[in-house]
Length: 160
Image 1: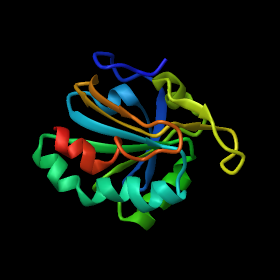
Image 2: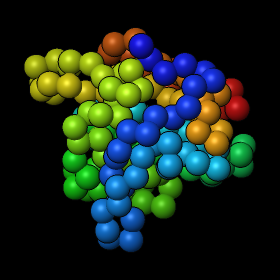
Image 3: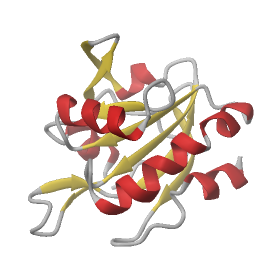
Image 4: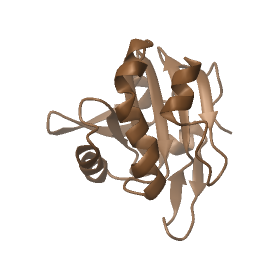
Protein backbone atom coordinates (compact mmCIF):
# COMPACT_ATOMS: atom_id res chain seq x y z
CA UNK A 1 0.00 0.00 0.00
CA UNK A 2 1.28 3.46 -0.92
CA UNK A 3 2.29 5.75 1.94
CA UNK A 4 -0.58 8.05 2.90
CA UNK A 5 -1.03 11.58 4.18
CA UNK A 6 -0.44 11.57 7.93
CA UNK A 7 2.07 8.74 7.86
CA UNK A 8 5.76 9.16 8.62
CA UNK A 9 8.56 8.85 6.10
CA UNK A 10 9.97 5.33 6.53
CA UNK A 11 13.24 4.42 8.20
CA UNK A 12 14.37 2.77 4.95
CA UNK A 13 18.09 3.22 4.40
CA UNK A 14 19.29 5.15 1.35
CA UNK A 15 22.55 6.75 0.20
CA UNK A 16 23.32 10.38 -0.59
CA UNK A 17 26.65 11.77 -1.73
CA UNK A 18 27.69 14.82 0.33
CA UNK A 19 31.00 16.63 0.04
CA UNK A 20 32.34 13.81 -2.11
CA UNK A 21 31.48 11.15 0.47
CA UNK A 22 28.78 8.51 0.40
CA UNK A 23 26.48 8.95 3.39
CA UNK A 24 24.01 6.32 4.55
CA UNK A 25 20.83 7.75 6.04
CA UNK A 26 17.16 6.91 6.25
CA UNK A 27 14.34 8.76 4.54
CA UNK A 28 12.99 9.56 8.02
CA UNK A 29 16.31 11.05 9.09
CA UNK A 30 16.61 12.99 5.82
CA UNK A 31 13.19 14.58 6.46
CA UNK A 32 13.66 15.19 10.20
CA UNK A 33 12.89 18.75 11.37
CA UNK A 34 12.42 20.01 7.79
CA UNK A 35 9.72 20.49 5.22
CA UNK A 36 10.78 18.41 2.24
CA UNK A 37 9.64 17.38 -1.19
CA UNK A 38 10.59 13.87 -2.20
CA UNK A 39 10.17 12.89 -5.81
CA UNK A 40 10.50 9.31 -6.93
CA UNK A 41 11.39 8.45 -10.50
CA UNK A 42 11.62 5.17 -12.42
CA UNK A 43 15.25 5.64 -13.38
CA UNK A 44 18.21 7.95 -13.64
CA UNK A 45 19.01 9.15 -17.15
CA UNK A 46 15.66 7.93 -18.52
CA UNK A 47 13.78 10.25 -20.92
CA UNK A 48 10.90 11.71 -18.88
CA UNK A 49 12.94 11.72 -15.68
CA UNK A 50 15.87 13.53 -17.31
CA UNK A 51 13.97 15.83 -19.64
CA UNK A 52 11.05 16.88 -17.43
CA UNK A 53 10.74 15.55 -13.86
CA UNK A 54 14.15 16.30 -12.31
CA UNK A 55 14.77 19.47 -14.38
CA UNK A 56 11.47 20.95 -13.17
CA UNK A 57 12.55 20.64 -9.56
CA UNK A 58 15.97 22.09 -10.34
CA UNK A 59 14.42 25.03 -12.20
CA UNK A 60 11.82 25.71 -9.51
CA UNK A 61 14.02 24.98 -6.46
CA UNK A 62 14.17 28.63 -5.39
CA UNK A 63 10.41 29.12 -5.79
CA UNK A 64 9.74 25.95 -3.81
CA UNK A 65 12.10 27.07 -1.07
CA UNK A 66 10.35 30.45 -0.99
CA UNK A 67 7.14 28.50 -0.23
CA UNK A 68 8.79 26.89 2.82
CA UNK A 69 10.50 23.84 1.37
CA UNK A 70 13.84 23.19 3.10
CA UNK A 71 15.06 20.32 0.92
CA UNK A 72 14.16 18.53 -2.28
CA UNK A 73 15.16 14.92 -2.83
CA UNK A 74 15.07 12.75 -5.93
CA UNK A 75 14.82 9.02 -5.18
CA UNK A 76 15.50 6.31 -7.72
CA UNK A 77 16.27 2.60 -7.60
CA UNK A 78 19.81 3.19 -8.81
CA UNK A 79 23.17 3.08 -7.05
CA UNK A 80 24.74 6.17 -5.51
CA UNK A 81 27.34 6.57 -8.27
CA UNK A 82 24.68 6.64 -10.99
CA UNK A 83 22.60 9.10 -8.95
CA UNK A 84 25.62 11.33 -8.29
CA UNK A 85 26.57 11.32 -11.97
CA UNK A 86 22.98 12.12 -12.99
CA UNK A 87 22.85 14.93 -10.45
CA UNK A 88 26.11 16.39 -11.71
CA UNK A 89 25.10 16.11 -15.37
CA UNK A 90 21.70 17.68 -14.72
CA UNK A 91 22.91 20.55 -12.53
CA UNK A 92 21.12 19.28 -9.40
CA UNK A 93 24.10 19.84 -7.10
CA UNK A 94 23.09 22.11 -4.24
CA UNK A 95 19.48 22.20 -5.39
CA UNK A 96 18.22 18.60 -5.22
CA UNK A 97 19.56 15.76 -3.07
CA UNK A 98 20.10 12.73 -5.27
CA UNK A 99 18.92 9.80 -3.16
CA UNK A 100 20.05 6.32 -4.17
CA UNK A 101 17.79 3.39 -3.32
CA UNK A 102 20.02 0.72 -4.80
CA UNK A 103 18.05 -2.27 -3.53
CA UNK A 104 14.60 -0.69 -3.77
CA UNK A 105 14.07 -0.85 0.00
CA UNK A 106 12.84 2.74 0.26
CA UNK A 107 10.54 2.33 -2.75
CA UNK A 108 9.13 -0.79 -1.10
CA UNK A 109 8.69 0.95 2.27
CA UNK A 110 6.88 3.82 0.51
CA UNK A 111 4.66 1.28 -1.28
CA UNK A 112 5.71 2.50 -4.71
CA UNK A 113 7.89 -0.38 -5.87
CA UNK A 114 6.81 -1.68 -9.23
CA UNK A 115 8.09 -4.14 -11.75
CA UNK A 116 8.90 -2.02 -14.75
CA UNK A 117 9.01 -2.56 -18.47
CA UNK A 118 11.65 -4.86 -19.95
CA UNK A 119 13.57 -1.76 -21.05
CA UNK A 120 14.27 -0.68 -17.45
CA UNK A 121 14.75 -4.15 -16.00
CA UNK A 122 13.27 -5.31 -12.75
CA UNK A 123 12.04 -3.39 -9.72
CA UNK A 124 11.72 0.39 -9.98
CA UNK A 125 9.92 3.19 -8.15
CA UNK A 126 6.62 4.51 -9.43
CA UNK A 127 6.66 8.21 -10.27
CA UNK A 128 5.45 10.48 -7.49
CA UNK A 129 6.04 13.60 -5.46
CA UNK A 130 5.27 13.97 -1.79
CA UNK A 131 5.59 16.76 0.72
CA UNK A 132 6.48 15.98 4.33
CA UNK A 133 6.86 18.24 7.33
CA UNK A 134 9.07 16.89 10.13
CA UNK A 135 8.78 13.45 8.47
CA UNK A 136 4.96 13.47 8.36
CA UNK A 137 3.50 13.30 4.85
CA UNK A 138 1.19 16.23 4.13
CA UNK A 139 0.65 15.83 0.37
CA UNK A 140 1.02 12.96 -2.11
CA UNK A 141 0.97 13.26 -5.90
CA UNK A 142 1.27 9.75 -7.37
CA UNK A 143 1.18 9.17 -11.09
CA UNK A 144 -0.61 6.44 -12.93
CA UNK A 145 1.75 4.20 -14.94
CA UNK A 146 3.36 5.96 -17.94
CA UNK A 147 1.88 9.35 -16.94
CA UNK A 148 3.66 12.56 -15.92
CA UNK A 149 1.35 15.29 -14.64
CA UNK A 150 0.62 15.55 -10.90
CA UNK A 151 4.19 14.93 -9.72
CA UNK A 152 5.67 17.82 -11.72
CA UNK A 153 7.33 20.70 -9.91
CA UNK A 154 4.87 23.12 -11.46
CA UNK A 155 1.83 21.15 -10.23
CA UNK A 156 3.23 20.78 -6.72
CA UNK A 157 4.32 24.44 -6.56
CA UNK A 158 0.80 25.61 -7.42
CA UNK A 159 -0.56 23.60 -4.49
CA UNK A 160 1.84 24.72 -1.75
